[in-house]
Image (cartoon, rainbow, N blue to C red; front, side, top):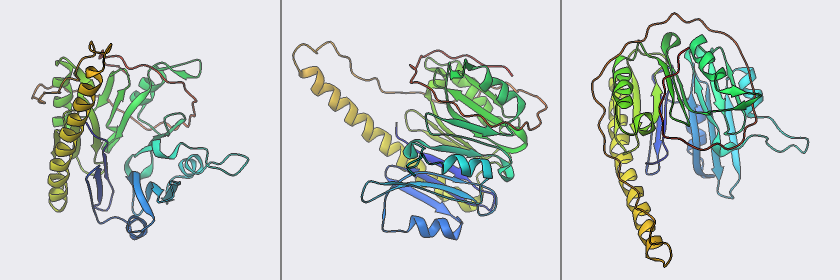
Length: 303
């Protein structure tokens, strides 16, 4: 698998990225100028929001990490640009991941150590709080996606899942099917919900398969391009891992190590609908957590 970024904004814009390809359209002029800078060596993450709002995290050619943002909620901006007494950034910039709800009225952000959120759907909030004990995560979120009308998806490091996706029915069926498979939710690697368009999403599985639905016509070519690039990047990364594993296995006293298995699975058509009435609830929370192991089990969390 490979690291990817999918994000949709309110003004018919998107930003997609994988190791070998970057695709975007109609993004804010300020973001376009930043992405065109000769100083950028690597883009860590991009999030698009309401009107011309955005977040960009990147590394320059000298190895320094940077945060650029525009028109984001005050609480979010304060978190992102926090500094220590010496004036150095507090955040682990390469690890920052942000999802914005419709009109930037809700968000979830973390840097792998500290987490804050605001105005999350009550069921999502309950699912998160159920994973916190004595101020520490018992099962950290690995993916939160916010969609239209309080729809959401939560996946955790232990591969538990909670969702309300009545406006993204195909994705809901895909997740229900994944629950029936050997690796379950673990094979779902990335998902972006379009916060301003019903049934529109992009999802990536661990074997590099990218599925999407109801993407606006002017963005369809971008999805097709990134789909082929992610599949290619994933196959190349799997090959490198297998070759590296073979070298390790050839070393004496380590011959018992096993090859990494190649993931093979398809998302199918099982369906279960979840219906709930949700209203926003404002909350900001910051946690400092220690690393936790990843387990292979799957459990559906109820709000």
